[in-house]
Amino acid sequence: MQGVGIIGWIIIGIAAGFVAEKVMKRDHGLLTNLLVGVVGALLGGWIAGLIGFSFGGWIGSFIVATIGAIVLLFLLGLIKKR
Image (cartoon, rainbow, N blue to C red; front, side, top):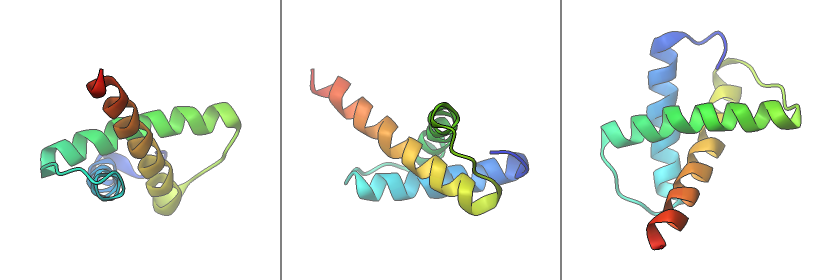
C-alpha cells in the first residue's frame, strides 16, 4: 500500500477486514478486522507483486487488501477445520 501512510493502512485495513468478514460470513470485532485487513493487505500485495498486478492509491490498495483478507480468512478456515 504505497503512498497511503500509516493512517491509510489502518483505515483500509479496517474496511478490507470488514468486507472480507461479510463475504466469508464471519463475525469479528473491530480489532480483528484491522488485523485481518492489514495482514490481508500484505498477503494481497505479495500476491499482486508475483503476478505483476500494479495498483496504487486508496482504491487499488483497498481492492488488493480485501482480496488478500478474503484469501487469509479462507486459508484460516481450512486450517481451523482440521
